[in-house]
Image 1: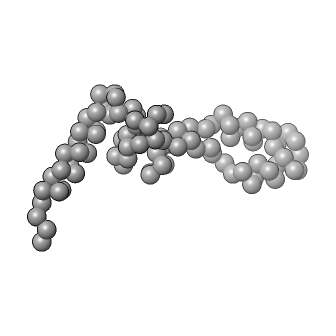
Image 2: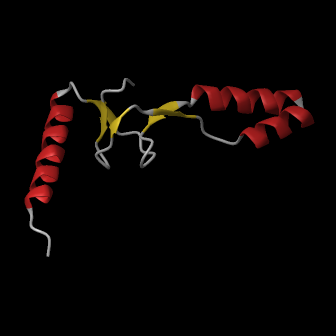
Length: 89
């Protein structure tokens, strides 16, 4: 996704990260043992890549330009503004 994304789970806004499932070490081990399991594992890892939130690692990042994205950003900003207005004890 682009830099203009917001997470529906935690409210993070910014760029998402690409997440590759599985383990690189297991992939190397399988390639060293036998070629077919290593190749299958590599293909599985590459085809299951996805964009995720860097903060909570969920796949709920949406563009801020979308209606729900604008609504979430507006709610987040109003919460921050109301927290700033509260007096310190």
